[in-house]
Amino acid sequence: MKSGVNLIITAVLTLGILGVLNFFASRHFVRYDMTENQDYTLSEATKRILRNIEDEVTIKIYLTVDPPTRILDLKRRIEDTVSEFRAAGRGKLRIDYIDPKADDAEMEKARKWGIRPLTVQVRKQDSFEQVQAYFGMAILYEDKREVIPIIANTQSLEYDMISSIKKLTLYATDDLPQIAFLGGHGEPGVQYGEYRGLGQITKKIVHVTTVNPSLPNSKGISNEENAVLVVARPVELAETDLYAIDQFLMKGGKIIFLLDPIQIDNSRGGTTAKDTNSNLDEMLAHYGVGVNHDLVMDDPRYVGKIPRQRGPFQFREPYPFFIAPTANNLSQESPVTASLDQMILPWASSLVPIEDNLKDREVIELAWTSDNAWTMDEEFDVTPPASPRDYPRGPDGRIGKRIVALAVTGKFTSFFKDKEIPVFIDRATGEPVPVQDGPLPDRVDQVESSQIIVVGDSGFLESQALRVPGNANFFLNAIEWLALNPELVTIRGKGEISRPLDPKLGKELKARKNRFKIFNLIGIPLVVAGLGLLRFLFRRLSRRRYMRAWASARPTKSPGGPSPTPGGTGKEVKKE
Image (cartoon, rainbow, N blue to C red):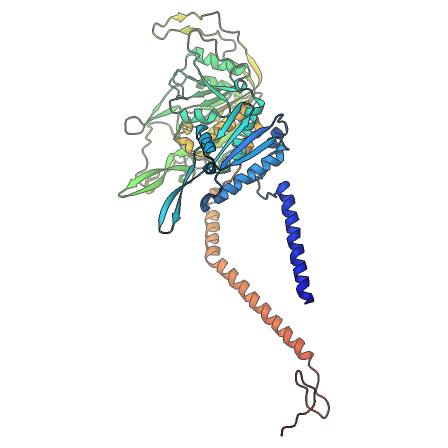
């Protein structure tokens, strides 16, 4: 009876302790993050922005209460992230969870704001059905609103949320930084051209515009209006264009050069390559960057794959011109690339730092190939290999690492220093055209500190190539680093990190792979069998100890009488 009462008291105390712990846990969000990059913990930059919020921010989370089982974990991770934001906001964040399926008015509002449900295929009995679940968010501040239409994963959720909060609370609508894309020289269009996808994702953090300094009434490119200039795939820039770009840099502006010395044409059913001239080579060499007119090719382990049809089957095979640097070939020192997993640069050209022209400037190699790369310098044949066996090999003596993206930071001098300021030339007549509304602004010959980024490829930012997350994040990180808050760059890259085995190990790599295979096939079963054997021996040893203890506890035989039996009195029982 007493033991039953003790059991009841213990159960009641245990439930009471668990209840108290649950009460405090629901009000004080605490979680220990054991990931290397603290992927499930808010960064200090996020916490700092949340601390500086002056007025209340409302976050409406449109979340289906009972989503399909396969995405139930996504719902939990979204709730965890929001809970961390709530705790860091210190009462300045109002969190509203809304199930649109339970409220027609809220569902209509969500649709009006662009929040659409995810469609998930689930299996029910012997058939598959499509079920819709809402995973969206709207962040409201005063009379402004930012929307995350669909949260497909939580890898970028912290960045999406904090960048939206920062945009709403720290900037007026017209005060967002602006970046300008150079236009008018065959560049890819940001609104309707090859860069339309890039324009859409970039508008989330900055204003985007297009400038054309070739117009006779142009006064150059304003560094007061534009924080960053993007020069992407230009063809035959005029002297006045070069002067406008140079002066933008000299007045403190930052520039991203996306170059295609060898341009690819897919418009006629096939793929052809031709050498082109942007007229930027000499000016970039003056800044310390040499641009080679070649196409980089790399080892099949370091390139992207393309679909190939073989009979009724389709395969994905390595394509030597799709350079795909992984974490081992992306700079861990630069915030632009430190958080990236992988990029794919199609038909890239190599870059070379010109040491003699880099006085007072520092070069940061951002992306490079393996040590087994080589280049095609003439007779550009970009036809895919007929089969994996026909994959090309680099010529002896020309195999080595190639740089495909780099940054230069420091003190720059003008390319036009000690030169005459160029005048506008009418391309039709060849005659000078007077500048309207007065002369060009005075020339600046030097800037104490600025940055440029040069990439030997522009196709990696076309809409189709943006499917590779690293491509878009490279550009967004560059914008953050050059013009916005470099601290937020590290947030965007949170998530899984690629940790490939280093192919440079050669035979050691192959031996290591074999050891892993052998361990998986033999080692794990042996470990399980060993644990079972240890358990068997332990139980056997315990049984022997028990038997010895029981035997030693038996009474010894009395002199002149029978041995007592267990539970007996020691007296002899006579049978009738």
